[in-house]
Image (tube, rainbow, N blue to C red; front, top):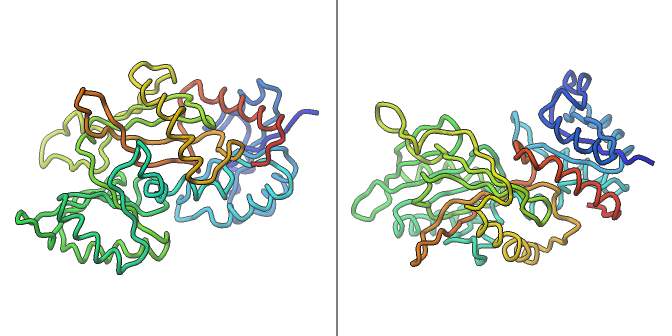
Length: 349
């Protein structure tokens, strides 16, 4: 009997009514699933017709989900409840909503900071701790990056830079990583009051050092379960202030991501670290077994300080689990291969 897999993304009723395997951004995933003998079907989701989506998902063998944690003012809270219920009744779900909070929130940066990808990372779980400890750390380093626990597209990620040359932190310049943001100057106390809203909604704020090699770009390491399946390298604008006048410098241009095969020579040291060390170590720290790893996820790295011998180091800045797309051309085939293996093995997550 042919296995069926539902591919879930967010949309309105019209998008659900008209969805086909070929008229959406995941069409390559549909093609590759069909190529390995799996019958995929679109499952456009919104809270307004959640019961209909639930009935659909209960009729398939597996579920692949691409829904952001924050999108169009909506969260995944209702969807995650639905997916937990579906998974408890038999269909395999990736990424499972119980795995996402372990891997796909900024808290993972703190919980795994002792691994080779870590940095001087701290966490604030109360407004009192935040008010006491953050100014001291900012004073010591001059600039830090604050991150709300859940978000995407740079929402709630801030570079905070002290403007007081005497080592004080009364006044700061802040820049959000979200597209279109511009630097603001304000008292530190006013900015921290703004950020305390994240503590109410996300339970914590994560604090990392600003990476001085940011202008050299970000490396996105695409993972198929516990194996690297591709890379993306992108020069980014996020957290890099625009020049006061004239055209942006090349390093600040928001360029298209350049995709690379998993075998790309410049990234082989990173690949070895991810497969042999960091992913197994992360799984142990977070309590995630191999069967629960998402079919597709990615780890975003910035270049850290070079070693004495001139080798690059890498600093983890985010793990994406909820909605990893676009992907290198070879990845949809890897997704299909992994889905087929999971369905064959009978794994439930």
